[in-house]
Length: 479
Image (cartoon, rainbow, N blue to C red; front, side):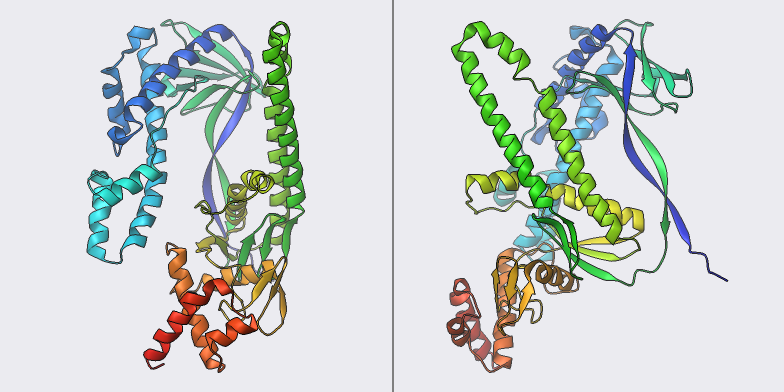
């Protein structure tokens, strides 16, 4: 008799985009979008910096109305209030994202719990009072602005929704005149509720954005397998088991980058030609320098790459496992690359890689843990030291053994998941010191010195000074 698998049901919230089939007064809709952009821009100008730090979004509307009132521009009061509240919520989301990096910087700066608590308190209440915290605050949280005037936010009291047929519904939304509503016909099978957003997209078409819930059934099996995943460019991922996921991603990314570069160069030539020929400039700007086709191609390419990545992930991850991945949220600084390489890296969808992992993990009941990525590609996974060299797709150990470089990095990421000494928020210089000390200890255990390792080519010359200093400290300590 087979035993049935236990299952767990969870609710997932997602955004649904519903196209508008017809609109009774599109001119009035576009007028409303323009007017709603005014309080949104004003909210960002007044509260998009220090003045709005930690402010309750419910208190934003009275502050904005001191500068301008809805009657001054002819916008209904509720539409004004909903626009201000929505803009303030977006500002608060940016603040929470900045706090993540500020907290990380605080924990890196000091190990003293009392100093950390003081800095954390100042971050929430007065982030500009301490000079160091002020610099970090200004670096991570920059003043925001918005120039968007292509959307209207409606709460439940601003519209009514009725079913017409099985596949269409009628949505009546508030307009400029009291008691007169704008009728929208939607291609939709369900009655809309909650907050909605009427948006004019880049193709100059209207659509409704609303949130919905769906039930996901997840297995509650015990997670007994762990893998490390290395994010790459030529392939999306390489696992510690030696599996390559979405092999050929680099070719798609390169072709996309080349097409964008070629298109932009041609557009620059046309723009220059339009300036030199006033008679043809209007026709060129209208027919050749628009954004509809350009945006449509870019969305299609992004969707193709996303499906390419997630298809291979679903084939590999079919049961609950624990996944360890690199934390690549921080930008790589201090690296000067050639322009073609910079173009490719700018188009590299590392955010999509992480989103794909989290999506598949949610579907299969797996867990995702991010680790510190410092020196994971320069370590030897067999010894846990910096002995060895990476040469393209190969990692050559000090013993002469060759390991696939991406598999070596994935194994290091897997081991890093259980490393209590190297934490996620640790600076790369601190990680380097720990790894070099481990290297010195390992060399001493096999009867070798740092000088011999450098002469034999086991250790990179860039670690020479610090490795020699740590070796002296190691022997002075009587080890």
